[in-house]
Amino acid sequence: MNEKQHIEQISIREGSPDDVDELVSLANRADVKRLVPFTDVVPRGEEYFRKVLKFQSNDFWVRVATLDGEIVGFISGEPTINLKTKERIEGVEHIKTLVVDPKHWGKKIGGRLVSEAIEIAKKKSKKQIELWTHETNSRAQRLYEGKGFKLTGERKEAENTNEWIVHYSLNI
Ligand SMILES: CC(C)(COP(=O)(O)OP(=O)(O)OC[C@H]1O[C@@H](n2cnc3c(N)ncnc32)[C@H](O)[C@@H]1OP(=O)(O)O)[C@@H](O)C(=O)NCCC(=O)NCCS
Image (cartoon, rainbow, N blue to C red; front, side, top):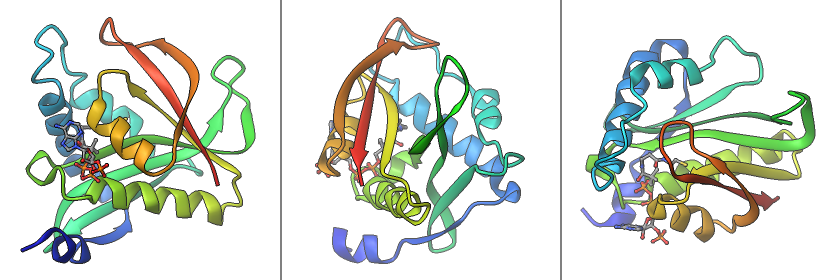
């Protein structure tokens, strides 16, 4: 099957609380795989991903990618808040988590999910969409840059490593 046929067979649906166990397990597997070259970094673990899947929060959304009925990735988001004051920043949507099953990396599923997030933000009449990613995460950065995201210059120290996290945004 070529890449085009593959991506055409991907379906996207809304995520639900019933998906949580599967999404947590998938996110952890992808995180562990991403960290294989970084032997000094301890993966964040399943409980971290369970906490960030905030289905109880009204404005939180998840889109799940499936292939032949199997979950192969997901993206989640919510309105952006000012990290210091916790106040919502009008007109800006935040991508919280993007994960693709490692056995399907490189087949544009991540790209499809990011495009979906951009459409969600547009439907919410947002003017900008933004995210943070580890500076060492070159695969994710290539994906975001390919979708037009630009580094804003903001950076902060990662919670679980001694790396930096960098900030990307896209005007939509
Ligand atoms: C980041 C992630 C979501 C990408 O998913 P994916 O389905 O492989 O994404 P795509 O196939 O759409 O695109 C991946 C990009 O990485 C590029 N890529 C492929 N192999 C690569 C490599 N070894 N190093 C760097 N980039 C690579 C691809 O060429 C593609 O860019 P392109 O569209 O310009 O060709 C996936 O790798 C993942 O789940 N990683 C672990 C979790 C994570 O890091 N999430 C992002 C947190 S911000």
